[in-house]
Length: 477
Ligand SMILES: [Mn+2]
Image 1 (cartoon, helix red, strand yellow):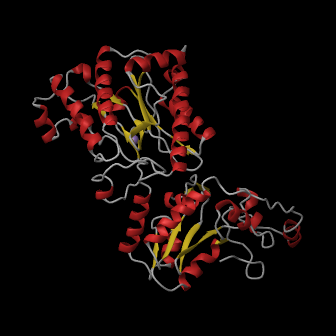
Image 2 (cartoon, protein in one colour):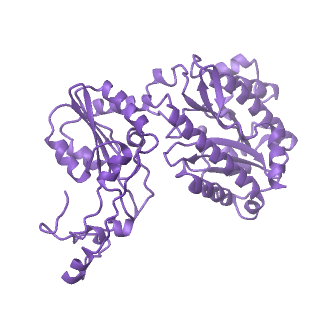
């Protein structure tokens, strides 16, 4: 609960600011500040978030639904990790600040949505300047009136929410994993099973993107395309330093045009490209090797791109690099062609895997026939991963959707997924001829399912080996 001057001074703040504060200074700091209340317009997606809340409301009539934003997490001592709002909370409100809680209160005919949020800092009791998270230190927050205008929701002080929820009767569900305080307050009213149903429903809601979301995904992709161009332009600087130069270059674009990167950038030069989740990015960048760059800008509304290109660092593929690259390209073409409304979700995976299995048999790395290879999954020693995943606010979006709705489901217009086949020949794989070892290739694009097929949102980046070389020559020239 809010502390007030009458109850108790703020003494246990981690920055120790309250030590040695005279009454005169306390009184001085409490006043003399201008009223800065602003008249704000609704966020661009206010109508979309309202429509999403209406869908959620219809699924759980008569039940109180609690969706927390999450809290700051300590990195060390008194510093915190950068905050990233919980996806479900951001999806339903558009708000991205810490400590918020969306509550859908059941009423006749649906729900009333209330957004609980931190208000402006209290200046009277010193919170404003004595608390390390007070506005004087951490920056101005929106007032509840401003937040109400922005998000189109009645806003209340979040420091009252646990009491409100504890006092309330009737069934309640909470999205778990983000706010331990809320879960503790509701401990005797919630069950893991019913809460999981809420989480699964929200994940499945996000399978089909609305028009606003598709626009944001395109923005994320467009920024990512520029980030890839930035990287090609500074490859010589990466050669002089390490993969970190590539990571830093892409990150600059992500921070300037978006909120952040949507996931840790994979900047994998040479044999590192065969490590699927290579995020250490501390290796050398050598001419003659390939660079596998898997990165995505996250927009200010938290939609992320997820794109991979595999580039010859010196600008030209060697014959064996080109052979492997062209095979992966052919597999990706087959995968993308299988993305259309009405297709089974797994069709694009099977289409891409078949091409790769054919190539591996053709090169003598696997014994045919191809049908037997596919049946036994023998190609997976070198294809390793699934061929893609849903994409949205989370890079692996809709991750808790039920199998029948996602992996065993059917594609619909508005779904967005990655198609990202690859071949990964480990440097220590003794079953391979030496010339293949240490080569990893992945090509990944972001594909929107449309009414009559699909649209490649990342088509602005070249994909064929010839187009990649021409594009690099132009940027480096
Ligand atoms: Mn991906």
